[in-house]
Image: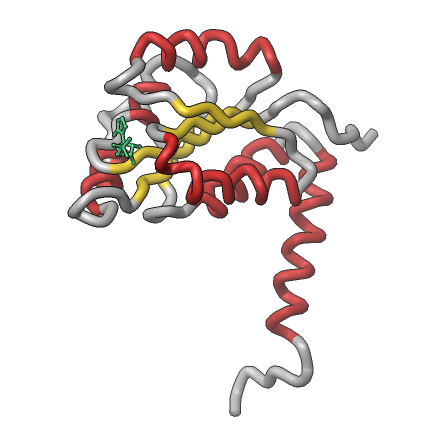
Length: 167
Ligand code: AIR
């Protein structure tokens, strides 16, 4: 039997600074377009580490099954969360600071063996949401349906007869 969408936040989105919100809010919008409720909090691995720990401990009780963690510069938030949970963690390196995201990409993706962070591209908030949806789809059939509809809509945009692939 297909399950129905839920009002529980299945995804917990964290970001390291209020200045990141313009990028990471796209993850929340994308999840919403797929019928997935999420919650979004500004928490820093360096500036508010105790609050990160408290958040990771309490989020599953509200329904969170996947974390998306975004940060720029020395981006340790996703790793710090992955160190404290067995739930999947998706890292979004952000283009903040003079290195334009290369620093955050390496800090997020280069995790030690045994503590994985699934890392998307720099500023890849949308793909973080799609990856979270695909992870959740293994358990929630309503998300499979939403993803199939979304993919069909994407393909339609490229397969329209007035847009030939070869000119
Ligand atoms: N940051 C915040 N705490 C730890 C890290 N790595 C990141 C934020 C932001 C960047 O540092 O995610 O992208 C700069 O933060 P701010 O608040 O100075 O703009």
